[in-house]
Image: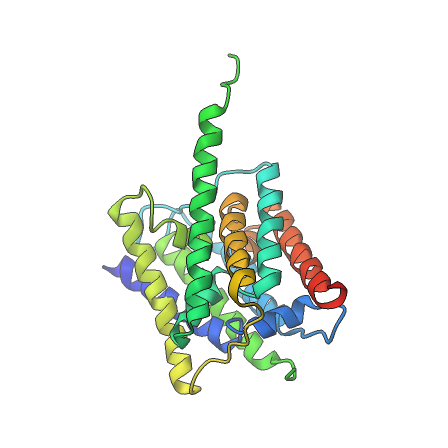
Length: 147
Length: 139
């Protein structure tokens, strides 16, 4: 129960942060990305504010044996740089540049009831599913390493 | 184009940071929205789905609170129709393949001093800036 309450509050703060920072406004985001035009630095301050908290705080949290309300930390395990990381990031960046939406802000923008937001999210989920299918197909074709 | 919203940006960013801290310190999870969303559908346990749905409900709720207080959210669409769909597909596919988005790689990954996240963040910001440049200044 404490776990889910904590999770909910975290989500609440996250959503408030997204809306207050205006990351839910694609115009703000593309304003930051438009380096050759009238540059809007707002997103820089958003990232800066977030990292000002997480950079020092994560360091201390990770030293603890575990989280407060769960049995362990669920952290990414991959360490290597491989091409899916880079190509995936490039594709994501392209999509972000076109619509000015990334997953969090798009979901937050659902509160406006705009059909375009729902359309974007539907396409986004579709894209994720496509990637999952592709991932599974590639894994099946992989030749196991010779022992 | 309105003036930069430095105060709102900082305040919002700090809240996003606090939220990420809370999720990690309390629930042991990384606040990477693409991963949280992706873990809801597909072959997952009920427990995995549950915390994700609750987090996202909170997220939408939080945005809703701000919308209530500020009398709506300003959402200036940059794409509609097929370009919007293409953008959604790219964001979904790319975040899944790349293992994260602005929150997962950009906020949490950098905070963990992850080389993968550092590279991913540079690549997606670069790709996004290039895309906007092409669409606004070359097309």
